[in-house]
Amino acid sequence: MKIRPFYPDDVPLFLALAAAEGWSSDPWEFAFILESFPRGCLAVEENGRPVAFVTAIRYGASGWIGNLIVAEEYRGRGYGTLLMGRAMGELLDSGVRTVWLTASAQGRPLYEKMGFREMDGVVRWRGTATGGAHWHDDLVAPDELVALDRAGWGDDRRCVLSAVAARGIVLRENGGFLVTQPCGSGFQLGPWAAEGRGVAGELLGRALSRLQGGAQVLLDVPARNSAAASVLAHAGFAACGRTVLMCVGDEPAYKPEKIFALATLGSVG
Image (tube, rainbow, N blue to C red; front, side, top):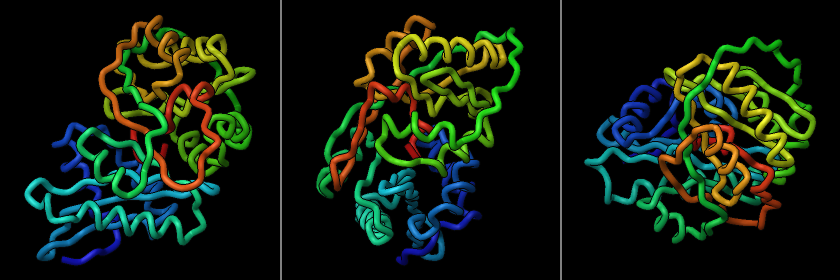
């Protein structure tokens, strides 16, 4: 057994393992993560074959660990704990003071043993795009989104915002923004930040009418944001899953009422 870097050539195998677990993963995230913070993206190799993976990314004084997976036949050997420890070590050595992740019910005990504490739940919502509208693209520079995003997360996530804005559509209203991204055969909403329900509702309506009618739309939402739940339910969305948002280290300036959707479906917050 050895720990080695997570290579771009490993992505197809990771995606196959993730699909078997029912995860929603997209190859674009790995191109971004492996380039942004390669020292925190690792694999366990057994007999020349990669059998476990983890990724990490840093922005500002915060880091995010995602994509921790161990092939089923290799579970119970401590590989997940080993990768988590190494990824956390790389983040802390780089100057990170708070590390985030989302945990399933199965993974939560491992993270709690490592000092992670619950900050919130994360609810996955599923809905359908309405389509039919033709909007002029908003000319929004990623830097314009930083302050609104920081209001919820308490950190400068410029690198994440630039990455998602480059591949999606950015919708902007006074007091909020929403990014739509391709996700498989459908779409993902997020990041989505807003100062209140009214602004959030306007952005959601624009997004759903802009996307292809009938397409599936997914997003991950802080459970403590009751306004987001109300806006989504009104638009016909339904909750279809739940994880736990956890962190370790310094207490973050986290304000879930300003966060209406995470940037990705699990890897970078």
